[in-house]
Amino acid sequence: MNCKSLLSILLALLFFSCSPSPEKQAQELIEKSLKAHQLSKNWGDVATIKFKKVTSSLDESGALENESEQWVEFRLKPYFEAKLTWTKDSILHVVNFNGSKTSYQMGDNSIQNEGFLKAKRAEIDAAFFAFAQPWSLLDENTSMSYEGQKTLENGEQVELIQVGNLPSPNPSWVYFDPVTFKVKAMERLEKDQKTLVENTSYDESTGLLFPKKQNKYRTDDAGKALILQAEYLYSDFEVTFE
Image 1 (cartoon, rainbow, N blue to C red):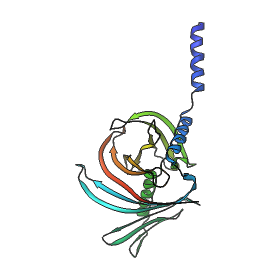
Image 2: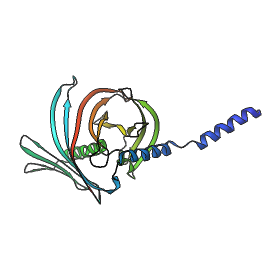
Image 3: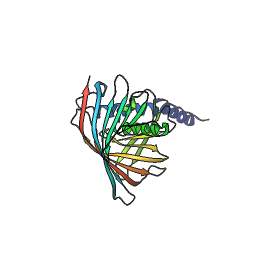
Image 4: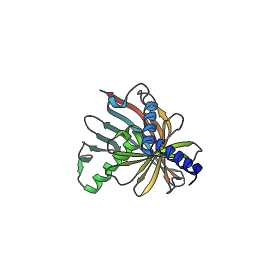
C-alpha cells in the first residue's frame, strides 16, 4: 500500500470518528426544536393542558364526511393522565386514563370490553403524539436516530428523525423545519396503515408553540401523502404551570 492510499484511509477514519452519531444528531435537533417551541414558558413547568379539538373527517374525494368536537385534557405531573370528552346524539362520552387504567363512560353506562378500552387508549396516545411534539421525545423510553432530509408534498424541505417508543414495536418519524426547527409533521403506523400529520399553523397564546391546525394524510410505504383523511383545529387552550 502506498503512502497516498494510506493517507486516504486515515483521513476517512478520522472523518467518521469525528462525525456525530445519528443518535447525537437527533438529540441536537430536538434541543434546537425545544428552544423554538418554548417561547416564554417552559414545558417542564407544565402541570396540565386542556384544549378543544375539532376534527373534520374527509372521504377519498375530499368531501366532508362528519365533524366532531372534543375536549382533550392532559395531566403531566406527578404522572401522565388523560381525558377525552365529547357529546354525540345528546349523550356524553368520557374516556379517562388515570395513569394505569383506561375507562369509558357513555352516558350512565360504563363500557368494560377490554378490546374497546385498548382501542380508546390508543386514541389517547395518538392524540398526545400529534399534539405534544417535540416534548414527548424527552421520554426516557424513547430512542431516536437522525435520518437526514426529505421533501414534503408541498415542496418544503424537512429534517427527520426516527423515533422508537418502548414497548411499541412500530417506529414513528418527526419532521423539523431545517431553519426555524419547528415541528412540521409526524408520521406513524396507525391501524395497519401509515399516516402523516402535518402542522399548517401554530398557536402562541400560552407562551408555548402548539399546533393550531393540522392535516392528516394516509401515506404509502415511502411516506408519500396519498389521501387527505382529516383536518384538526385546536383552540381554547388552558395551561396550568407549577
